[in-house]
Image (tube, rainbow, N blue to C red; front, side, top):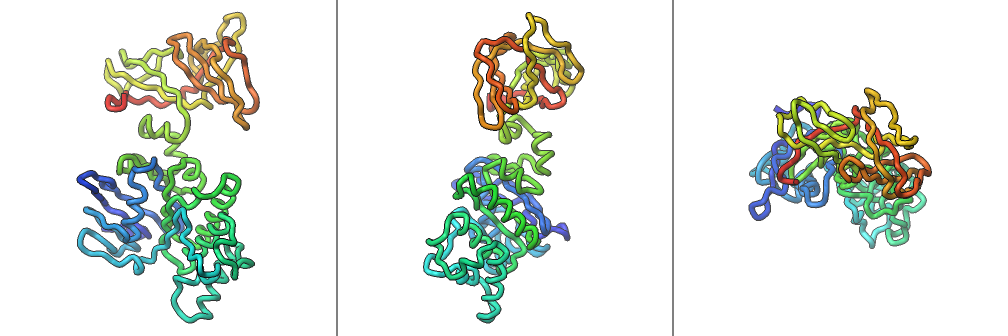
Length: 364
């Protein structure tokens, strides 16, 4: 039985091309007023999933339901125009021969006066009312994006599908336009499914993130949980740079330069990777070779020398060569911190910010 509160429900959808599953047994629900991001690298099946929901492609297995009503399976199919779905793509797809207000009114039904009134209302919502009689080529990229949003929302769709809609904007505009778009979407109460390959965008906009890889959803949840409890090394690395410390389990422990790590979930002889993000390495100056005291929070200090340091704008990135095994670990420090190469230092790591995974033999 479908979830009665779901606006959009995807059940076990699979799509194959040439015998390969591009979308592989995907299930997902999106509630009214909720923004869910399909996040993943190019080619992982995100856009194909969106096309199936929109009705421009058809799955080989599974079902799509809108407001509890079946709109397509492998036999039955409601036409795209009858699904109450709004679409926004990265090229905006505005009609060049129509004015702004004509573009927004294009998909509306009813009498001319009512259509124009609704188009004017939506242009006011996106602060584009003063450009109503202009043509798309007279607008900037950010202005065109606002018009595309107004056009998509004008028919009051229950579901909004967005495929990389901000990728054509320059960095200066992108954050501003994303925030404005999110505000309008929330006010309209549509269920939003946003496709993106940018983790920052997903974290900024989403109520929930569905992380896709090789056609499958490998992790699904709130942004905080996805970031702080990744399902595997690849999931952790998708959101930020990571450091990888390798070791082998012996007697429920894994020895590293930072002391022994408890690894009770792994059997003896298992090769493991301890993952920690650069911002969770703590740097201490070397004082005549004397290490800082170990703490329960940060464990045992490990000696390293600076390999390279770079200022990145709001923070500095320092690369260290570990005395223990010659490996390189990265640390980020707020502001300007540029020690010279060869400077000896001590590193400590936040134990509560580490993730331990068995080595994936296929990826090794």
